[in-house]
Amino acid sequence: MSKNVIFCFSGTGNCLDIAKNIAKGLGDTDIVLMRKAPAVTNVLNAERVGFVFPCYAGGLPGKVEEYVRRIAIGPDAYKFAVCSCAAYPGLGLSIIDSIVDLDYWSVISHQSACIWLMPHSMMMPPLKADKAQKRSEELAARVTSDVLAGKKLSGKPAAPAFNKMEAALWPKLSLKKAAKLQVSDACVSCGQCAKLCPRGNIRLENGKPVFGKDCVQCLGCLQFCPAGAIHMGGATVKRERYHNPHVTAAELTETVLHID
Ligand SMILES: Cc1cc2nc3c(=O)[nH]c(=O)nc-3n(C[C@H](O)[C@H](O)[C@H](O)COP(=O)(O)O)c2cc1C
Image 1 (cartoon, rainbow, N blue to C red):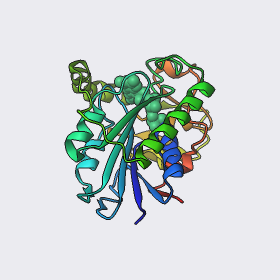
Image 2 (cartoon, protein in one colour):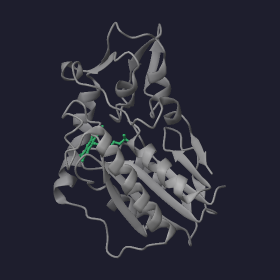
Image 3 (cartoon, helix red, strand yellow):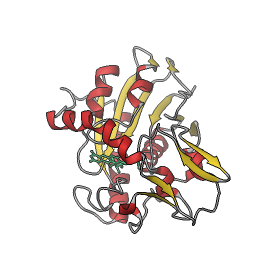
Image 4 (cartoon, rainbow, N blue to C red):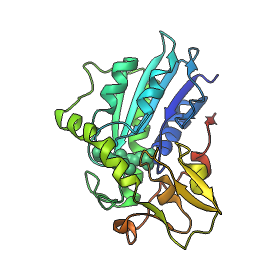
C-alpha cells in the first residue's frame, strides 16, 4: 500500500483533479475512486488518509457516507478532507469528521456541475472556467503544504441547519430529476456513459443508454458525453457542458490511480 491514500468521489472531475494535484505534492499516493463496489477499505498502514468529494444539495453524494464508514484507518494516521462545491460546502466535512475524526479540512469552490439548476459560472465567487481552475490548483497546493506540515485544525467543521433541511429533501428530488434523464438521436453508442456511471446505473440496450433508479446525479454521463446526447429534461438541451479540463472519462472509471 502507498504511504498516502486519498478516497475520492467525482462526477465531473473537479474532485479528481484536486485529489491528483494533492497527490502529486505528497508523492506515493493511491487515489481510490469511491464507486459502486468499495474497492479498498483497509488502509491501516497508510500514514495519511484523505477524502476529496463534492457537496451535493448541502450533503454528500449518495453512498459516500456508507463507503467512508467501511474504511479501516490506523490509529496514528493523519486524516484530512477537502470539499469541492459551487458555493458552500454543506454537511459533508462534518459527516466525515464524525466518522474519522479529521485533523484538517478545507473547501475549494469550483465550476458548478449542477447543469439543470444554474450555469457553471454561478460558483461563489463567480469566475470564468480558466480562473476557477487556476484558483483550484492554487488552493490544492495550499492544502498539500498544510498536509505535509501535519497542520491540525481546532474545532469542528460547520453543520448549518439550512443544509440539513436541504440534504433531507434531496433524495426525493433527486429521484424526480433522475427520471428525466434521456438520450437523443445524437447518441453514437460509444457506451462511455455506462462505463462512467459510479453507481453502475446505466445499461446499454441496442447500444443506447437506459437509466436505472440508482442515480446520484453526479452527471458525469451527461457532462462527458462526446455527442452531447444525454439530457435531463428540456432545461439542459441548450446548456453548455462542463467537465474538468485535466480529467478524462477513462480516469474516472478507474478504481485506483497511483501517483508517485
Ligand atoms: C447534484 C448536484 C448537487 C450539487 N449541490 C451543490 C450544493 O448544494 N452546493 C454547492 O455549493 N454546490 C453544489 N453542487 C456543485 C458541486 O459540488 C461542484 O460542481 C463540484 O466541484 C463537483 O465536483 P466533481 O466535478 O468532482 O463532481 C452540486 C452539484 C451537483 C451535480
